[in-house]
Amino acid sequence: MNSGTFYAEGKPAFVAGAAVGNAIGTAINTAATYQDCMMATGYTPETSATQANVAKIKPVMAQASSCGVAVYSAPEAEPIRMHSPYNPSEMTAAQLSDRAFATDSEIAVITALYPRLVECQQNVLNQLSTTMPTLVPVLSAAYATGAEEITLLKSRRLTWGDFNTRRKNRLVDFQARLSAELGKAQ
Image (cartoon, rainbow, N blue to C red; front, side, top):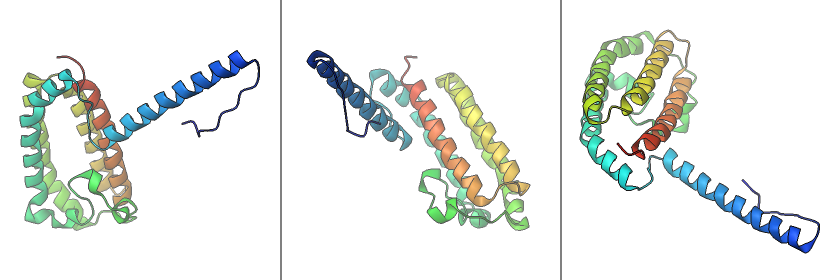
């Protein structure tokens, strides 16, 4: 992003043209940065196509969230909740920097609960295949990456902090891809 400083030397017409070009470039960069920040926090641009597509998938995503929360809120998930919140955007600095590896008991909980989460994910993919099929590959890729990260966590090749950081980054990436897909006319 332009720091705000600008320097041009030459004929007045050149300097004026350079100043206008600098102003346009700065405005474009500012708008793009603003949109990227908004999308990274979960907002999507408001277009009629976006609104229509959001309306299509809202019930599916609400059901997905409900299913995921049920798995995450199960009493046996308590050891996991202290390391990682349900919503990756709510992770604390301590959770993102946690250098601990999963313990045997935490691995047992993950092993027991993860199939239930996969069932939730499969239901979402099945429903999206009829309501908005273009989202299926985007969500499938995010789920596959999550599965790989869970395998690394269980095999103690990822710390909780690294796992959480990857989850948070995956959410930001997914939101950007989702926003792009939702903005397309279906």
